[in-house]
Image (cartoon, rainbow, N blue to C red; front, side, top):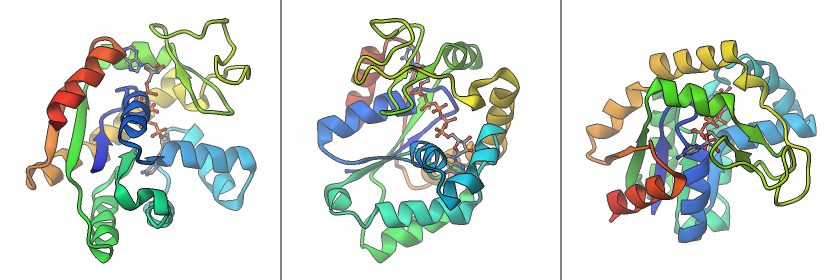
Length: 212
Ligand code: AP5
């Protein structure tokens, strides 16, 4: 199963992608998580990406295309993969086509998570993230101890790009560059629209149904 999760910031891509990847035993490849880790590790790639990410702008296509090309060579990705946050532009989608063609593979489903703006803003304003394991907590899914990750006891943080003005910038990037991908994949008949409003369990059930 080769899947893409598409949807605006705060739609729940990461939350649902983690669950689905665990269920199918396939890697969850999040370009956002990979870039944040590179930035936290202070690698040259991370340093290059950090300022753009913090400002809510997209990182250059060549950088993320390279990350995904490399990630898809891993043995774990051989039986399937789940892309979260990639592709995000038409040039990234065409690069992905080339990468997959080289490996004789294709995208089976694009899960399009649909969530109204008001709900997106509310979710992003309430998000806290574990800097170590990247687990996200929200107003509807708080940690057991306030401000502390349930999994590893790390102190939770607010993502710099979740500040309101950065969120506006990210939403603009989504509308002007990423939303076009819906048409790109619709033409191939692989888009599965899913209502992303409701509890995490409810949305997960809808995704399961859309894939069956
Ligand atoms: P990235 O990390 O991909 O961010 P994003 O796409 O903006 O998405 P988010 O992580 O904000 O939201 P999500 O949809 O995953 O929602 P989540 O599950 O966390 O990218 C960050 C940056 O990296 C980009 O801006 C860019 O700079 C760079 N980048 C990454 N990929 C790139 C690429 N391909 N090209 C160029 N640049 C790239 O949920 C959000 C909140 O809601 C959480 O608190 C969660 O707990 C809560 N929640 C989730 N589901 C529900 C629910 N059903 N009910 C209630 N709350 C919920």
